[in-house]
Amino acid sequence: MGSTLPSFGSLVRTAWDLSRPRLRGLIVLAVLPLVPLFLFFPVQSLTVLQRGVLVGGEPSVPTSWFQTLGIVVLIAAFALNKISAAGMFAYLADPRIHGGRAALRRGWQRWLPYLWTELLLAVIVAVAMAPGLLLGWWLVSFFSVNAVNPEDLGLLFLALLAPAVLLLPGVAIAVRYAFAPLAVAVGSTAGPAALSLSSKMVQGHFWPVLGRLLLWILVQIIVVRMVSPLPILNWFVPYAISILGLAYLVALYQALRKV
Image 1 (tube, rainbow, N blue to C red):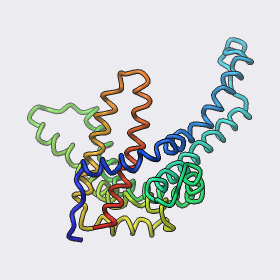
Image 2: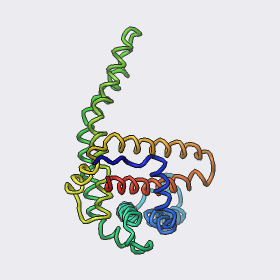
Image 3: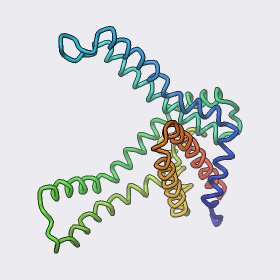
Image 4: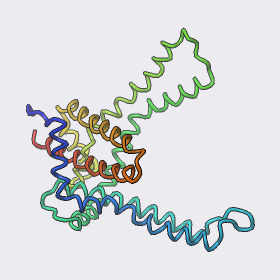
């Protein structure tokens, strides 16, 4: 436990080394959740063209079967998103998995435990953040209908600071359990056991882990903002950064397993 974690730059290089030889399979897995949507939208467009944009001067209302089909497509895309995420984590972290097909099979095997762990984590973080979010919502409502005097700016600052402070327990929990979904994808654990494993890994390294996660989030925001005005790149770069982000999380996970 006395060992230190690799630097941010070292983790980024490790993430690149992990993702580069697997890039083709990772791209296929990343695009996989979009397939149902790509198949659905042409059907939707043809249906609108056949019925006409307007029916009797009123906007065309989708039929019940079409609404049902849309719900099925969204559910399929959601499930494929979890299969894809679990498969990419396993592909990056497990050297025994060779090729996109093997990663997809792994994702299929682990997506339900992966989903269950993500939902459990989301509920725990939401409960921890609820006091801060509710207080923030109440303060916004209060100050939207009550003018603030200049002499009360200090009180206003404290009022805005209070919700932020109340959000900190949720942030701490999110960091402690950040590696639980990854542990599910690469292992046989799930649910509370995965959360416990992640907590034990982060124990004694909370601040270094928090710092490295915040640095990556900051870099990701900067890069995405830089390419947002550029056509094509504003679509491609966020996908590429998200893939590299998974590899970065795997690199940090592997480093924690060693210390």
